[in-house]
Length: 94
Image (cartoon, rainbow, N blue to C red; front, side, top):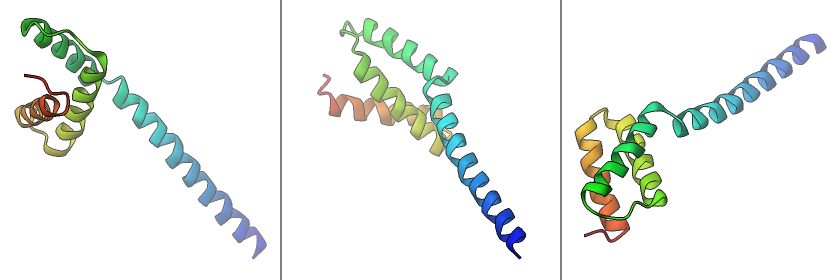
């Protein structure tokens, strides 16, 4: 009986630890994902075209929004349009 309880305890701890590590890994992956890198670069480009000073905080916020929306809807254009509008409102652009 004790052996079974020990095994269950070890198994539960393993899964809790695995979940924690997996969450950390996914957060880091999201931060440095290829989609995020492209988003930042495209954001810089659009800011330059619009003759607006590039701001890293605005870029990060916009790309975080895009990644979140894209993961929900899987629609590039909808995600882009929604986050562009939210960024304009949030940071009083144009």
